[in-house]
Image (cartoon, rainbow over all chains, first blue to last red; front, side, top):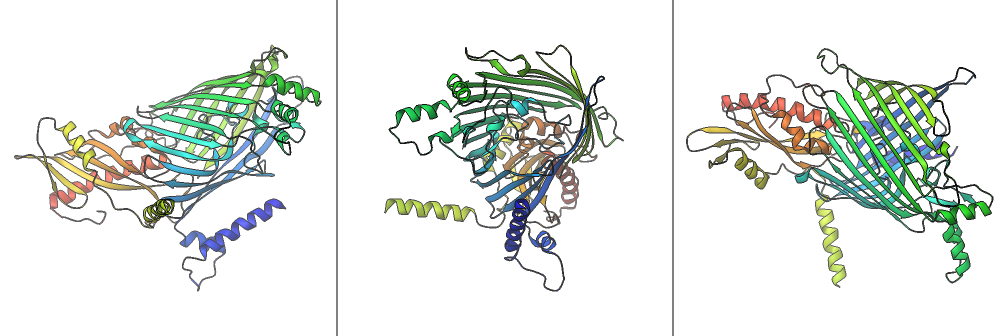
Amino acid sequence: MKKAIYLLILTLIFINVKAFSQQDQSTYANAAQKMLNSNSKLTIGGYGQIDFNQPLDNSKFSAGNLDVHRLVMLFGYRFTKKLQFVTEIEFEHVKEVYIEQAFINYSFNNYINFRAGLMLVPMGIINEYHEPTTFNGVERPIIDKYISPTTWREIGLGFSGLIPEISMRYQAYIMNGFASYNDGDFLLSGANGLRKGRQKGAESFINTPSLATKIEYYGILGLNLGFSTYFGKTQSTLYDGVDKDANIDIATADSTVVGVKMIGFDARYSRKGFGFRGQFYNVWLSNTVQYNSIAQNKGTTADLGDGMFGYYAEISYNVFHEFDKLKTMLIPFVRYSNYDTHYSVNANITANDSYNKTYITTGFSWKLSQGVVLKTDMQFVKSKANSKYEKHFNAGIGVWF
Amino acid sequence: MKKAIILILIVSWIVNSSFIGKEELAYPTKKINRELRRLWKDESVDIDKFNQNVYVIANSNDTLGYLYLGRVNSCRQGGCAVNSLEENLAFEFFDYFMITDSDLRVKKVKIYNYQATHGHEVMSSGWLRQFKMYDGKQSLVYGKDIEAISGATISAKALNEDLKYTLNHLEIILSNKKTSLSKF
């Protein structure tokens, strides 16, 4: 019901915007058609990912999973030459509605743009470039689920721009951070890392902001290198209503806050059909002894580690590259990933080997055009606690327009 | 009082630069002169205007080459202007200049005003170097003859097509000594 109302309001807003431009009174067209035909400042796009996932096990039955994993609509509206608004509305698993982005962008010049609103955190490749036609494999790389918890977006403001003379791009934003404690729930854990702490701009709360930056170098043909950083403390509802001189209560609330430092290095290279991608993340968490301890007292096992890392290396090749007559791209690939949310742990907990996972993904992507891809892959998954690899088969469709 | 003046200045600057309507193609003098010095090291060259987009590069004896300034429309993939036939604000754009030798083969392509929000990698001099010696006679297939740029597909393809179109039409207008053409 809520989603229907939201969509209705959005449509009404667009119709109202339309009212300021000229209308053709003689033809009967629905509101959307009128808007699309005459409003030259509106852009529309979208992407979609439809997946089939099947665990393979010789000894047990296991149902496959068919899912419209994501459908995202992008709307951009250019108010003036320098000011625009961009929003992405995401439908996940058909049932869940989220806003992925909603920000204004003011362009002073090529060097500086000002942005404010709900924005993507500039950490790594996939969080920024996550349309399904831009990566191999049906699902996004696993380290971009548990280490850099994509799609990671928060409300904030900051600057981005290009320095063309040295072929670099930069982004620097002050943004809201992860929630670590929300009304009795401890959101961070060894099992899920920081993922459940994402607030996504949905009635999010903030005690202290975080700083996210990224620089990219693209000067060499075919190569793109990135370096991202993220610093901040997490947010907690336990401060609410506490007197500013109630030291014990403040100390208790402080225990529910974790300090987060994250860096990411990424590299993309493509030349003559050959492709290479690498991504590396390292996360340092502080105050985890207090966090795990207070969680334990309240009946939750948090077992949050002190250090997490994740990386992958991927190679691919477009086997149709040399053939002029073949207009599509057939790209076999192989990716090796490893991540560990218990890479280092404080003295009070033991590192859990099942949080150290290796994924080997291999398959191919068949790009029918720039905006449509059919993908299939096999994944071999093993944690340090297991001796055997589990096998998963995946197939999917990706579109981007 | 001071604060009010500063505020008025800021607001009027923002309003001024937000003026609806496309900015004119600018002649980036410094950047062009720098490239001319690089390409014709010891010579002193003259630039003569042929029309608003095309200039002839010559020394005292010969024509050395040509300079073309152009604008390419682009958009973010996904998210392109729903009505793609009109020149309209929804298009993002970038401006570039191209220097050719006297036989209309590319010596240098440089993008100097990149207004689009995505696809900045197309400005990379490493990527643009691929067009050196291109004369527009054959198509360059994006993704095969020219390296693809993930995330800058629209800008890259648009530039590739614009260069081919421009080189072929430069030949026509220069040989017929026409001073105007529909595109220019």
